[in-house]
Image (cartoon, rainbow, N blue to C red; front, top):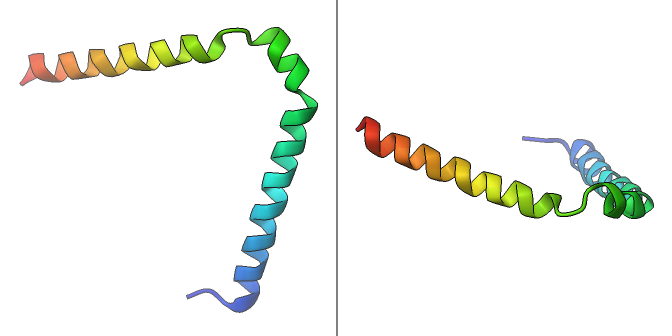
Length: 62
C-alpha cells in the first residue's frame, strides 16, 4: 500500500512532531500553570454535563 520511503518518512515525521510538541509544552509549562489554573477540572465537568444532556435529550426524544 505504501512504499518503503513513505513509511520511513511517516515514522520520522511522527517522531519529530512528538519531539517538537514535548519541547513546546515543556517550554510553556510555567505559563500554563499561571494562566490555566483549574481548567482541566472545569473542562471535565463541562464534558460530563454535555454528555448527560445529550443522553437525557435522546431519552426524551425517543
